[in-house]
Length: 261
Image (cartoon, rainbow, N blue to C red):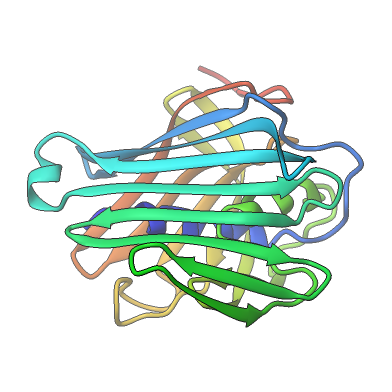
């Protein structure tokens, strides 16, 4: 089963492990775009992409982050996926103001908008499919599923992170908050479609017995540079091994360092 939600969730998990020191310069900028190939072995199951666009929301300058993922080729006949995620991030605070999730995963659909009130520390969840609105409490540093990806890229200090470090952070998804934990495993050179690249290697702690085989069945490799973009996510699932590999990119703010082609 291919799920863009899975891809985003695992991506957020490893960013959560890197909240070490706030850097003065953003790791990303307007126009950044990354595309990932999701595959079982040599078989491509689908593609996922995410892009950054400078915009405004209720007169506030924001980064509008738009992500989408879908099955391709023969895979969509077995399990059709078409997922869209959006986040509007306040450029001055790096906190999300609005989150949108519209998905179709094998007939399972959701169309939800969440508006965050930072002063009241509440999240207003609007289920557009049945027009139901509810309110939930949040913490001061709560991030949504997409915004955390970028907030924590700005918080990574690649010069001080130590092997074995773990960090717990707050995440809001659906109607409630969650805690996530990641462990830094060390540095490793990884062979990619662009050449050999220095990476940071992580292991998120995930719930076993449902989708993943066990608690520590996911491994993530991130570029060891100021971009801190994911290069490879590998998961052992109950139905086999699934990978998401960086396939294309453009608009990176910092040089993408390749050791050799």
